[in-house]
Length: 368
Image 1 (cartoon, rainbow, N blue to C red):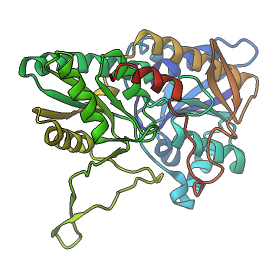
Image 2 (cartoon, rainbow, N blue to C red):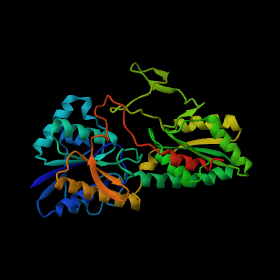
Image 3 (cartoon, rainbow, N blue to C red):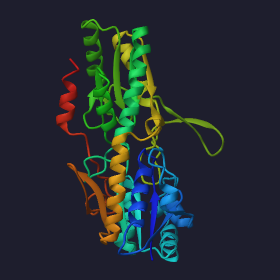
Image 4 (cartoon, one colour):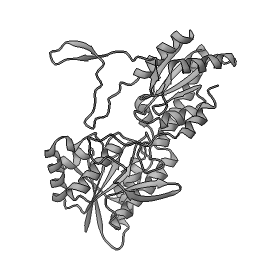
């Protein structure tokens, strides 16, 4: 019997359970070899600490519609501590695993690639992120569910925005790439969209808002990514508690164990709203959708895409395509080498898939 480990790492996303279900059921049906699946709880922390959960078709058969992940998740960087890598490799060996399916975003996939390349762990990667910024795949599961959540929220906010004749600045997730912002903004008839890929100035946004009033509209919706580059906007100073118990003001950017900036939800929305009200004279409010975008049940597209990813990951295990990443290219789900999709070392600049200029040009048609 061959034993296959499965873990989910990084931020949660609708569709994770679909991948788990697809992989477990496909491996259980394999006739040429008998497989046993073992889940690791809370991502790489679960492998490091050897916290496991038995996975079989009976356990996963009706989890397709559930959001989140039955395995739990965490943002654990094994490579911040060499001893954690040693523990993870030891756990992999002591569990007598034949292979490991790692489901996650760029950070999780980096760890899987390094463990495969340097430690001999037979890893298969499955790309997951609501941000849709993983290289090599057209779409990640979780993205379309997040877009649906964001679009629905913006539609609801429009009602109160119209009633008070306000401008509403809605902040969507997207630290490095603005996929959710661009798609949800276009789908919800936003009057301006600001994403990290295309720097703008607050005057550009103010001009678009004034144009909507000239057209006779008494309200405006502006959608911004949390990582948007907007000139003329200064976020509020960060107030932090120091080790001696005092409070001090700082502009220092906090970073997680993978080097990602830890952004304060609502910071950019509030800053843009304040400057926009000063520039236009129109009453303006800012709101961050935050983790609402990760919540809820996966949409049908993500249920199907996650299922296809899970089944393909299982078949990659069966056919020994280790060191590969499951991707969607066009209409086909296939595997490609992980090398090139992630950094070779954590000292390098991260690699992301950005919203193409053609889509941003399309959105700008509606800015006036």
